Length: 128
Image (tube, rainbow, N blue to C red; front, side, top):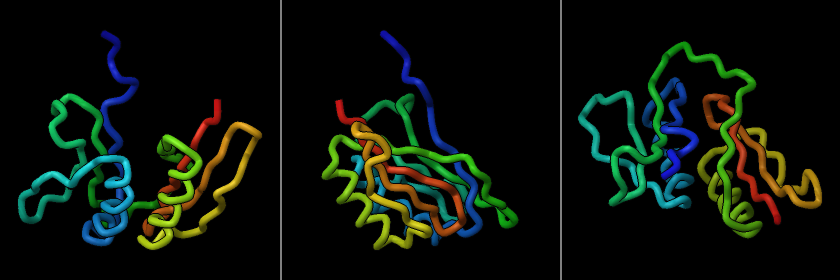
């Protein structure tokens, strides 16, 4: 059996509650749920319910002086319609500097935006 390409995404944000409010509706679109956390936990994580703890997860840590860079996390969508729908969710959640959705090539459809802390994100669909 082939191992997944990655284990997890671990971003840095400046404000935990603001980041949870931003990421939770977006990650739920991909079937992830916010796992129970202890009060004061600076590392909230999202996983798909019922999957092994060894499967992919998304999380972040609070770093008060975080400075975003040009790295980008791209979320693979299942369809062009999913890119459109999740783009609307991201906008409603507070996405900044939204670009798209648009075709970058005849087979690559995507939206680009920043989270409230300036982390670069993308929603994409590769048309086969």
